[in-house]
Structure formats: structure tokens, C-alpha cells
Image: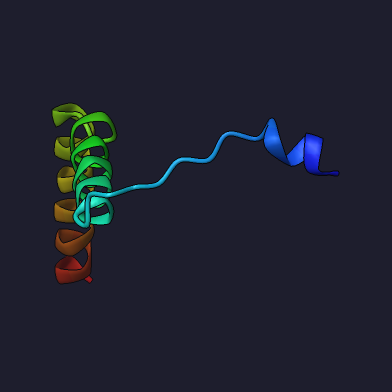
Length: 58
């Protein structure tokens, strides 16, 4: 078993801000890659506006 364990690489993270940097990287990715396009945002706003107008007319 020791020969198998000797082949497994082990890394030690010495940067105490590694978790914070990882969270910041993930947040930036979510904001830039998965940001809705203008057209989908505009159509969603249009649907909400029409929904509120329909409620007022009833």
C-alpha cells in the first residue's frame, strides 16, 4: 500500500486568501458568462409591463 501512496501527488496551499480568490473568480465568471443578453432582459421587462397593465384593466 505504501508504494501506491508514494505515487499520489500532494499539494499544499500556502496562500491564506486562496478561498477568497476562488470565490471572486467564480463570481466574475457567473457575472460575465451567464449574464442575460439585452434582448432577453428587454423582453422580460416587456412581459412584466404587459402583465401589470392587464391587471389594471381588469
